[in-house]
Structure formats: C-alpha cells, structure tokens
Length: 143
Image (tube, rainbow, N blue to C red; front, side, top):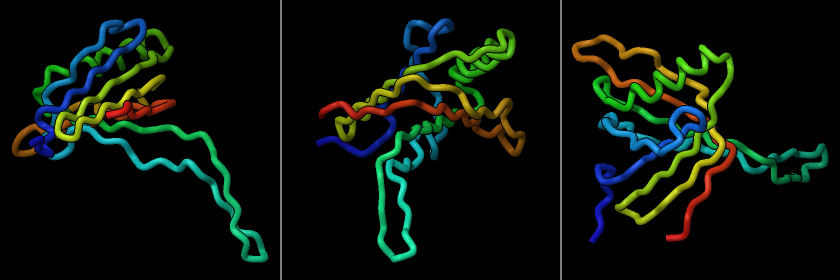
C-alpha cells in the first residue's frame, strides 16, 4: 500500500538554453517541498438583476519550490537568475512532478521564474529558500 509521504516524490526541471537535460531537484524544505497555488479558471460577474454569469478564462499556474539552505539544487536557480540578469532575457522552463504515494504525474510547460529568495535567512540555523515559477500550463497525466 502506498503512503502519502512526499519523501519519494520527484521534481525535474529543464531550462531551455541553460539546462537542456532535466535536472532533478533535491534538498527540499521539510514543511514546504513544492506546491501549486490555487488557480482561477472562471471569471464571474453578477448583473444588477442578481443573475450570475461566468466564463472560462485562461490562467497561469504558480509552482512554489522551497529548498533547504544547503540544497545543491539552489545552484540551479542561482544560475538561472544570474543568466537572465547577464543576458537581460528570460529563460523558459518545463517541469515534471511524480508523486509516488498517489501515482500522480504532472507536466508543467513554458514557465518563467517570477520570484526568488536570493539568500537564506540567518536565524538559529539558515532558513529555506523559496522559488516561484509561473507556468503557462499544468497537465495531470492519467494515473
């Protein structure tokens, strides 16, 4: 029987022009490894007569990745950010997540790093770093 642990999940990140071969991300923070933000696939409007109307709207998916301060994978994000600053251009990423406990697989396409924690917070011990990639699409593969 499968368990709900995140410990055996896998996230791979491919960044066109920088890391053409997918890189396995490692060294996640214990409480916040990775997660996608809620999405808003429908916009609704209430008319003055009290009738609610709605329609589908395209939406982005934000993927939050939180790494321990000593994670070797921090270098992937640091290099990505540095390359963008040097080139004054963006590098586009794709990601794959496999969650063993539930048998789920997700493909994230055409993503941009939209937020980064440039250094670990210095408290009793160094704090995790958070990176946010905003993707054009997130597709769940059939189980």
